[in-house]
Length: 300
Image 1 (spheres, one colour):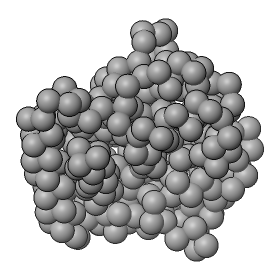
Image 2 (cartoon, one colour):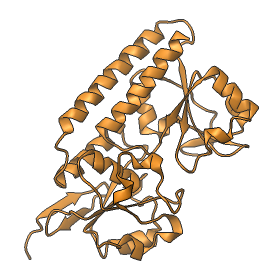
Image 3 (cartoon, one colour):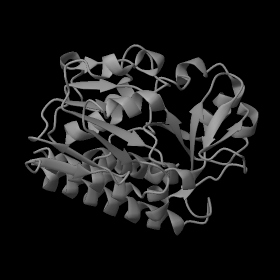
Image 4 (cartoon, helix red, strand yellow):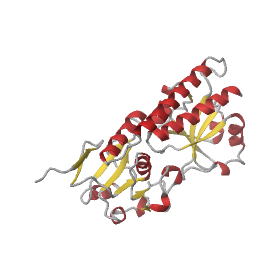
C-alpha cells in the first residue's frame, strides 16, 4: 500500500491520513475561525449543543458566514449532516479525555469510518500558547499560515503592553495588586456562572501577564461557580469580562436588574468570548483589550 501523502497526529494520539492535502474541510466553528485566521478556509462549520440552527457569530471570528455552509448543532447534527459536501477532513476540538466536543459520541465514532478527523485539545490542561501552536501546526500542514510572522508580532506587542500596564498598576496602593478582573457568563435573571480562572487557558494567560483575577467561591464545577446575581455583585471587581456567546443572556436583558446595575456602576464591562479563535491575531486583540481596560480602570 502506498504511503499517504498527508498525515497529522492529533491530540488524542491518533494520526489522520489522506491521499492528498485536504481541501474540503469541515470544522467546529471555533476551529474553523482559527483556521481562517491562518489562511485555511473551511467549507462548512458546525456548532455545539449550546448553539442553535444558525451560527453563533461570537464564535465565528472572521469567517465569511455568507459563503460557507453551517451544518447545525446538537441533535440536528447527525452523520448525514456532517458528511454533506463530501469533506475530506473534519477538524474538531476536545476539552480533555479525547471526547469530541459538540458531537454525540456515537456520531463521532462513525464519522471516522468515512472521513479523517483531527481533534485539538483546548481544555484546561493546555496553556494558551500550546493550543495556539497546535492549531498553527495543523494550519501549516494544510498549506496555510503564510502570514504567521505578522500575527506573532501583533501578539508579542500586545503581551509586552499588558505586562507593562499591569506592572504599573501593581505599584499603586489601591486596589492591592491592580484592578481586579472577574469573568462571568450571565444565565438569566436568577443566576450567573462565574469563571474559575485556573480552568481557562486565556484567564491563566492573563494572570501570567500580571492581571489580578477574582477567584469565585469554591464549587463542584470544573470551570464555573454558579452564583446568584446578588452574590456576584458582592465580588470585588473593577473589570468584568462578560460572555457574549449566544447561550449567554445578553447584557441588554440585564440592565433592569439592580445587582447588574451595581456591577456596571463600579466596573468596566468588556465582551468576552470563551470560544474565541485560537490564533495569534485573536489572542493579540484579547490581550490588548484587557490592557486598555486595566489602564483605564487605574485612571478612574
